[in-house]
Length: 361
Length: 266
Image (cartoon, rainbow over all chains, first blue to last red; front, side):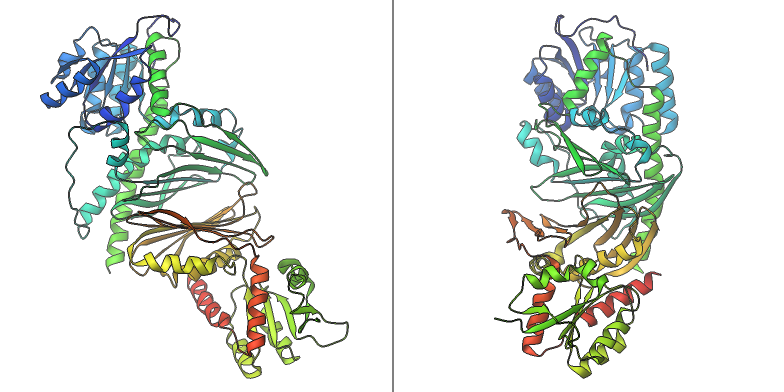
């Protein structure tokens, strides 16, 4: 997706204006604290939420305008960059509307669409309008990941095993370390005897949690379209055990969200004679970057930790895109990331249903 | 003080089990047999045919046998021979014999009913036989978890394997084998519960690297006492206890269950 702006150095200009669609916990506990660290280049100017009191309260924290409508935010001339943090089903239409409104750059929280068709529509509009779009796959902007990328050599071609393991407490634990949250979505008590509950939990796990690292996995999976699900199992209360084969690569995805205090977020790529391990910091808190270790033979080199995390990294990238000082990611790459995630989600729920039936027989 | 028990070891057992080093670290208990003398203890390698070789050693008068890294094999005849001769047969298993696993068993048992998932990865050098790796991996896993339900191999190949199973409470188990020269060889266990769990890292028995067993709960993380003793030396200490007490070992019975599990996978 291309940029239409003239190149200008960062830091020498008036901060760019940011408008945020959706003022839920992610906006409150992730984006606003990240933007607070970047006041010299970015300024929150408009907060939109369908709940007027939430919009007003969150906007007041940063001295921004508030509204309850997409059109009001997109029509605000002080908004240069639009961040889409609304529920998944609204993403595609809101990205397209932001592009058509002539904004300078768009950040869309993952997933940026819920189907390949939606992704193609977004791509076409971005191409037509020249508005750069990035998807909030924050780990791809983490300085630890970027340092690893610069040093991992031919590992993406030679890796035979890729692992992503995520262990997290409930979001509220880290949200409360990051800010003072108003309004949280209500939790439910799922019926694990209902296969539809299991299927929805698996799909939600992939499109809501695994998707954070699927763009990383895809970097090491050249044959990502040749996908086979070896196992897909639900972990209570929320998590998964998923094993995949993509071409010649084996992909192992693990997640457990429980009441632990101890987060672990690890990505690994392993070949016969090299290995990459990245330990990411938890979301929400400003705990710096991941630490990456690249091992060749028996010699290891460690990169990081650096001072900022991937969320701040994506905002820095957005500022550069809006200024025209950096090229945006290709539309094909974003679409492939989405297609990969959707393929895994679709295939996984079918296998999970069969596993569920087998476990009960 | 001279050694109580004399030892002979095959060249293969010496190579795989570091027999000389292990008995040198227990000099009051074990010592090499003089050339031509019958030894109290025979150390053999666990390659195919090890049960026959162990029976031969018992028939030759050995009252103790150490088997290093045994491959799955029918142990019924050996168990009979050991029982009849009151000989102790102990298994020196790559990871399952690590002394840190005794504490790990207790830590796992105390939370097993609340287990949500067990994710375990065994790593060995590129070129390792994945079938053998799976045996060694599974031996270590069942030592701390007990028998697994619904064990099956999902895939295996030159780079490793993935197997699945269930714990007694139905929680999913994933066993993965990875072959690489750039990842430390060993076994990593992660048992997750509703509020923490147990993590276990078992190193190679090449040195006295300790297993690290950590119990995680609401109160924090506890590192169980580290034991700087290799799996090899631990095995020889266990053998001495059996020889001193005149007891036989339960190792073969446990290995028979492992062999049966492996056989069902094939």
